[in-house]
Image 1 (spheres, helix red, strand yellow):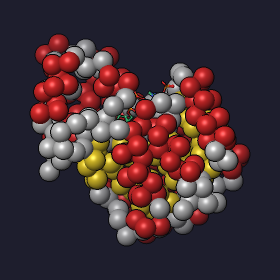
Image 2: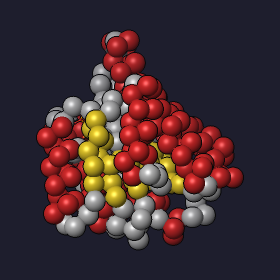
Image 3: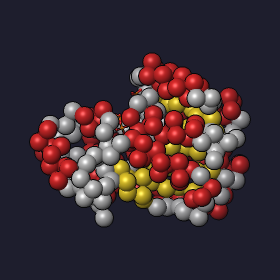
Image 4: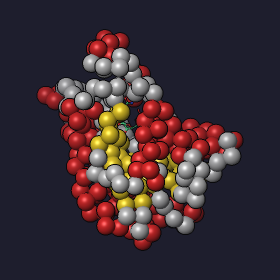
Length: 246
Ligand code: NAP
């Protein structure tokens, strides 16, 4: 259980981040719901948590902006006085074949997915080091583990998240902070809903368990890694993908 803990979930206005925020709140954590553009949907997540008796706050921050992340984490500390769990979930895709990919599409994806994860760790870890404990959970992807045609930018960003996770785990271990990654496979969210039917069918054929996962499948893994039960696990990549990357 996570009573007395304060958790930040980036990109928690919908999809996996929303499910993680709801799960951590249901375990007793006070949850900061971060979003970039979807203020109304972030407020809906807060209302749902409060309706169930939990504690939550909504904070806007574009995670790719280094200065904005410093201000964001400062706001979390000034409102809640501590920070125990950071889930770096905010992410985007801009798929396309490598030969035709624009510089802008490459940079946007790496800036949000990889640099955004660095930015939040950079400022959150300072507080966790003072507390001498903390849990950092970064969302990678099966694309970062295996690579994926049409996702050079996304795969690079998510493979980068794995390297960042391992380096941060080594640097922060002596301060009682664990850093792990979750690599989801295909999960039913807005990120995957517009994939052409043919691509979806091709994807399902590569999933030993035979279907897309749900955001709650990822939330369960995140809640475990955030808990005391995972105290001796750091620097790992937990694939929650129906067996795709075994
Ligand atoms: P989603 O439904 O598209 O939601 C993305 C979330 O990220 C939204 O809450 C969005 O907030 C937020 N976000 C985007 N850019 C942001 C920024 N610059 N600053 C702050 N927040 C930002 O995505 P999802 O499917 O839940 O994916 C969540 C994470 O899991 C991502 O890192 C994704 O790469 C990873 N993942 C997903 C799958 C999958 O199959 N769905 C598979 C592997 C990995 P706004 O709406 O406010 O912009």
